[in-house]
Image 1 (cartoon, rainbow, N blue to C red):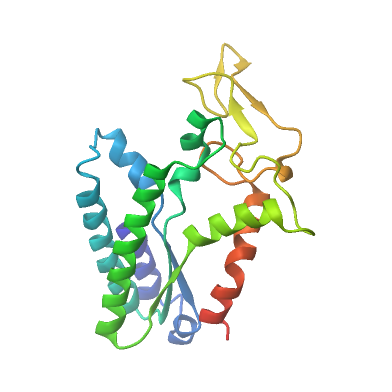
Image 2 (cartoon, helix red, strand yellow):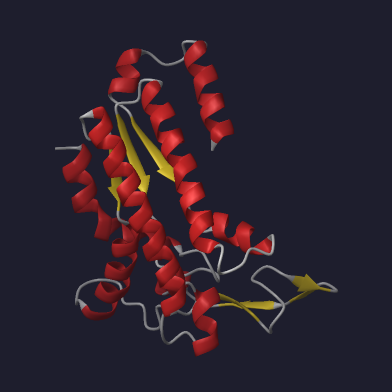
Length: 220
């Protein structure tokens, strides 16, 4: 993210954007599950997870201050979705229920993020940064699509469209020219595309759940 902000600063130095542009713009900042995947891939421990989260969001706070300092008046910060509802977590329960431990990680992340953003806004004496509640939007979309008439219904919302044929493989993997995954007939009927990413229909459901609150913060 620091590199991205560096690149943005260079664009400003080249005067590719005016002050008017910045005043009418919203910066979207996303810190998502890949950071936790990288942490675990480096043999990160469960015991060290809370310290990692605090360190990561401390750096995020510095990044938000820097973006604001470059002249952006409004920043939308995405909190993290319910990680325990990702198919990579629910596969052990045959995609029936979300993982409590996975969701606990996301909830802790979001609590630390909320305190950090609140502190920054109090310091600047204006609501520069607003949190987009992806956690709530994901859960709302999953529940609404299963219950409300007149909307797309995901028959099995925690099951992905693209599934590996066995343990050790992922969607898109092949072996000796043979596909080691299967794809559903209609991706628009599923909330998730693969073991971590929503499908296009899934993202639309999240957008619809998020739209009213996002509009109230930025467009009204």
